[in-house]
Length: 317
Image (tube, rainbow, N blue to C red; front, side):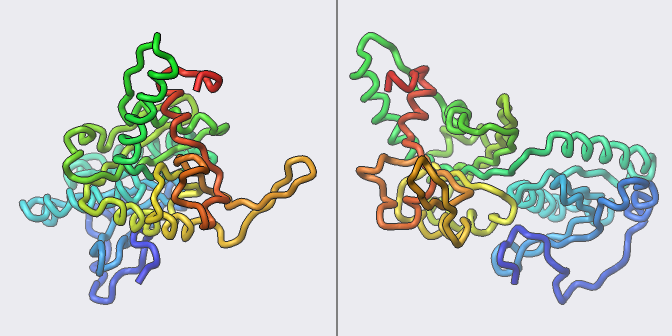
């Protein structure tokens, strides 16, 4: 069993290789300069949690999957439903998926490959310095926004403040980044909050240093689901941003960060910290992470992000 369910795996034991289909063969013949970069037939998932999904072609460095839908295997109601479930899984695993019908391949396989080549080049040109995941406990953000609004209104009684939606808040949470970055934001919340944020699922928000892709996860046990997801897909990301403050997140975040501390100096003082993570949380006086290694993770109080989204400068907070 794979440590990370989202990771490509070998074919399961029950699978019998049927060889390339006709349309897969025709597509392969036109690959040309893509032949060295593209890989054929990969499996995703483990059978206990996420079943097993076979993909036709994958360009790993661009996180791009190519699926060829032959009429025989992709025309029934059940198969179309299974395809939709699988595609949602692959997208949430951090991959883009491009699909071609058998008719498209038969009519112009070279044109289909050319489309893949163009998309591949675009993705590689836009490739970020780092891939980052932002895990958001939406009820935490909602509660803190209400408290922060009350505080800032009392601090500036002559100013009018209106809270901004979560997708407008996110860019303010990543202003500290200095290089181009693709950020996948995972929004976790109980089902009763779905009406407020369901429109954001699958949306992409561009900002001056890259883009943020938002994925929604409504679940009764959303806190535990967040931790499970973080550990399951940790192989896809270089850094992790957690917008939350609850002891339930200590174990999952610690497990995806380096085992050993890094050291840095400020003047004559040397400090230890845990690299590859950032927390948007409560202040030191009431954070849930006291007593854990997470106190050595870079952090910022969420109220500063909320204040920035309201148009306040650092000196006005």
